[in-house]
Length: 158
Image (cartoon, rainbow, N blue to C red; front, side, top):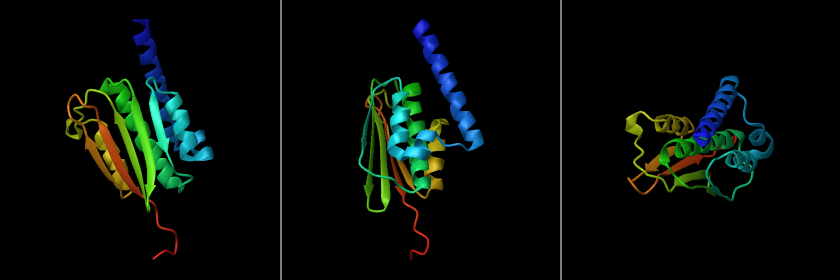
């Protein structure tokens, strides 16, 4: 019982911090100062399940890093809250001018955006960045979320 109470307190405090940051438009310091790698390392350190990070990109435009970070943060929050997973993985790589983000877990699966979950918010965030989101979630096989985020064009680019 004590473990459940501590976990609930942890999630409430984290949600409060995230809400505060969102309301004030403040990015996590680790993200704004160190980029996506540092921001995600800090995020993953706070997770209650092991998360394997495979990231092979250097610094990216701030808007791309910010979108990727919040997509991953929300996806991992969903994993912890809903999936019953024992572990998760995050893979990030650059494919030309598109950042590919994948978050997967070994949980119960069955995630469905039509059920009014936070997955709709994730889809909206990705679409606002002109990206695409694909969710694969067979019951009993975990969930994998794949986002493709195009890098913004440079000023003056054709």
